[in-house]
Length: 102
Image (cartoon, rainbow, N blue to C red; front, side, top):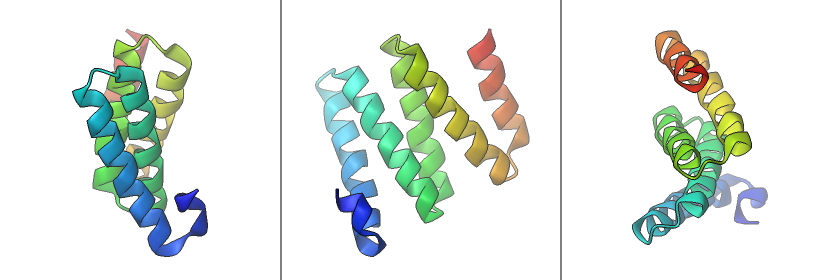
């Protein structure tokens, strides 16, 4: 809900989603952590904070892989690849695609 208000609310939501992801990860709630990382990654991407977007989306993809959640893993990976390509990191984007198809 905080993310929908825009402006500073969106940036705060990105930080809170990242903090929630870390908290979930610390208690072993991998799937919940992955969802929170995915949200944080999308919000950071929308804000133009590409470095944080990539870090969070990579964490989401990894978490969904551990949780064996194929559909959200694929969606998070698509978003990660899009951010990487948009920022000129085509080789990293291709590496993500290869990792998912191996």
